Image 1 (tube, one colour):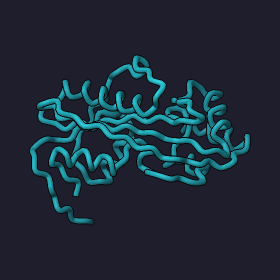
Image 2 (tube, rainbow, N blue to C red):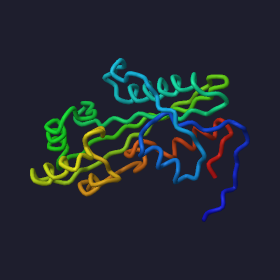
Image 3 (tube, rainbow, N blue to C red):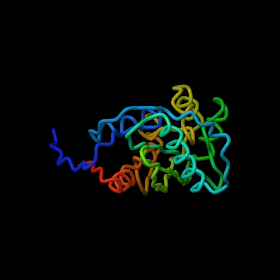
Length: 201
């Protein structure tokens, strides 16, 4: 097991403002101690045709909502969207929507944009970053798409696929952050935590 240098210089605890098992798994693999308090904001209330501004706004609003529920904490929140042809692709409403989304992405490049915010619940100071990652999908057959959708995996995922699951079978190229596509870019996370004198290593 890797021994950490432990550069933490404050007594604030970490809180993940997300119910996403993917984000939880990323923090666990970084050997961080944290609690989970999912954000309850209605994402549908926030609209913006600029995907970068949208994910930054949503990440910060999620962090703000949870910061009111916890004390002495650094609240981590994130939001991810998939963008193809300048259009934001959210989570599919049903299986047919998932299939259409995957047909659209098949054999093409798209962008995954993740906004991440860290907010100090003591003084409400916050910082926000974002990451853009380019993803190229393989040419998926109709049978492959049907079989993938039948697994149920695409149903709660932006863009209708999970790179860390069966969806990774169809990812041909990635330029950027693998963790950002999962939903939590760890490079940006480390930068934000460092601003609060909280070191991961």
